[in-house]
Image 1 (spheres, rainbow, N blue to C red):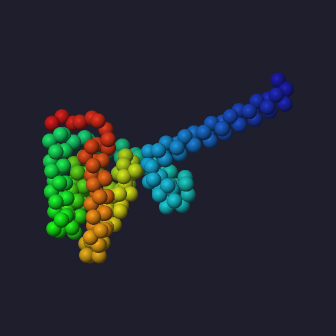
Image 2: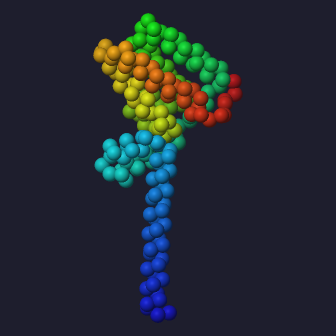
Length: 184
């Protein structure tokens, strides 16, 4: 085999390897974007580089995969639905209390499903893996709930917080849209 032929083969192999690596990176990026939704851009924009942001998202996936996230038995799901109705009714007379109770109820539901509940940032990061499209609701609700602890939230903001909490609550209650149900 001539040197020219050998060189052409080596160059072709290197080019194909580079194409394969590039395709793999693009597929990984696409998968992360689809899985995390708007949280992908938020994380990448907040990181020092795209690669660092994507590493953070992969680390979240690993932390999430180590959790024992479980569906709720029907009886528990019904109890949470009744509790949410009660919190919504409370809003009429005591909007700030209702927002605090909605936050506690969402946290309780997360705990029961198997999510960590030690701090908002950790909650948000783990939720982002399966609930990235709903996470902005939770962030907005939490921000308003924080304002309301110092009585700085308007009634309209408090109403908005209830709507935001409800979006995440419904998704967590329905197991993220999955159809499986735990035995009652």
